[in-house]
Length: 281
Image (cartoon, rainbow, N blue to C red; front, side):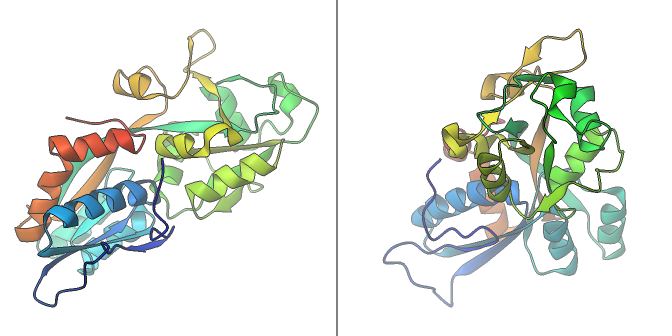
């Protein structure tokens, strides 16, 4: 993936060349998932080119941050890489609305290691044991006699929550896991440390190129080893797959609805594939 320099990791305010803010224009404020921030930014740039009367601002910070912003009225749409929690939906209803879910893309979480690491395949249970601190040396899973360095997202991340629920089976992360604020930071950490392991959204694997290597994952010890790819995410054979969501304040209206419709359109879904994710349409 190639992202323009105007896209920042945690706060993205997009402007087209030759395009200036118009006080009379409609505005859409989107906040949330770091996994979705670059995809949303690409959508916004293309959308604004075709709809110069609508301004779109995209901000990262994590799924929890985005949903909280939707609840407190500082965002029109919330990006999330996990489903909304029951407690969050109850808060929305207490404020007089329902947060409506829109599945805008599919994603696989790639478990990544340094290219020099000899380990090529891990079973889900092995990944769980590594991230909960039960396995601490690569030798235990067929690798070198070296201490495993763990990288994970921070707790505001939907990817952090999804990985904990679906891979760690709701167990706590090891206290030695290093929590980083972005997918890009995890890619950089793994690329620089031959004994490290991390996990990132499928789109970031494309961006990383050959600086890291994705492991093949086995659902259990007797299952086939499957690598993360568009095809394996779409057909459900890759064990760590998920939906990516946008939540709206009730049924979207006005400019927010126009943008949601765009994301799910043929053109919007083409951008999903261009950015390394899997389309839903």
